[in-house]
Length: 599
Image 1 (spheres, one colour):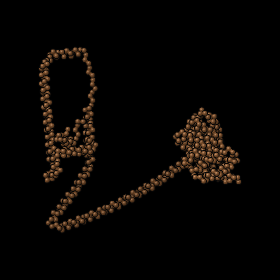
Image 2: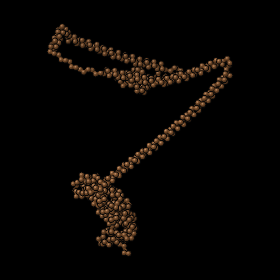
Image 3: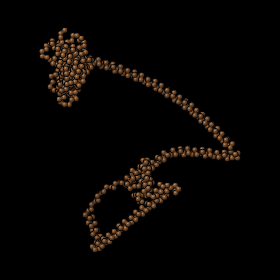
Image 4: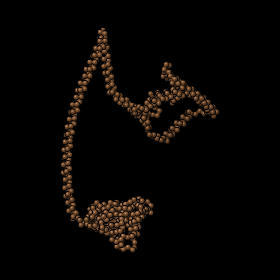
């Protein structure tokens, strides 16, 4: 066995002895080892074999599984390690234990690289700064190139990449840059292994084709449209089965390509794809008719079977409902009979119990009566019996009259309430109608007819004759001044006298208010034997009666506001100067402030 490369041995020793944080930076030295210009083809294979044998490739795989944001160098280190991992695996032919390498290690490497690409794509989409976006896009491109380099060296990995969930998630994106990169990866897969679409399951194939057609229908970017069209053309050229799948699954694809993508700069590929689709459509017309007839026959059979099944289920459901209805009716009738029997037993037991209680009460009554008769003198027995009979008759009459009065009251209470409500509503309606009659607008003013010239002359002649017959009396200037002075003196005397009369009237009203208040207090005052210090304070202070009257008036107002709506219905149609209820006005007029009636 040949000796191992000294650089690989030294690096493996450093990795083994170093800490976890230093391993990623040490593994980056593998790039210099692999890219040495003095290496030939056989020497390169030997170094890659030594790297794998000493576990450095496994170290790269383990580092890619870690949190890349905590690595020294961050995402740039992760992208370089992905590139180093792909270069270490390409060209390596494993003769000893090939199952471990081809069936476990390589698929695991593909999974880790795709997960790394998914994380870089997510951070590129979330990045805001241009410099940061360019860095993430460059690292994403590096990782995708490593994936392409890896399945280019190992063709069997193409199907593994295509069936990976992370690859479908990377392809299903609305970002233009990363979508174009992922479609280039898909193009490389089809170029390297053209039969991969025939090897994968239908779900994966349909998912990829759905995403390509969706990109054509949802975007207007020529770069995305060109990449998707080229991929569909490559797929259509692979096999006739895939062309039939495109025409059958996407019936509006030809119209979409003609309407939206004609004249966008890739007409050659677009016309080739349309020619393939139209050729498949015309060549499959004869077979389509046969298939259509078979489908119609199968559909008719399915419809007939469905209808027969529906009728059978409906009959069975109705039968079950009928049985259920009969059982429910029987149980209900039996329950009613049992309840009726139980009620009869309860009534009989109650009657028997009432009869026993009545007999017991009569027995006790007779015993008390005999005991009293033993104590009453013989000459007073008849009198006592008459008194007992009268008392019993009065008790029976009292209970009967009370029962009858209560029954009549309950019968008349609702009718009396309705009668009062009707009276109030009628009074309110009459007031409203009277108010509308008073506010009836006057007839429109009509302009009087103009006078003719003859009428005007006759009227003027009458006026002149009246002035001649009744000449106006003339008054001199001195007489006018004297008359004016006398009028001024009389007016001043009238004003002075009216002001004095007004003051006297106000004083009379004040005295009358005080007298009324004192009289009411005296009328409501308790007797001397029941007088307390609080009652004495009422007569000492003038504010206490005023506060008492104010409280009474306030209670009256609250009582008025709690009336039912039909009692207050007349207030809506009252004039501003109309006084409310007479009882309410009487209460309000008894409130005096400072001995004067409030207006």
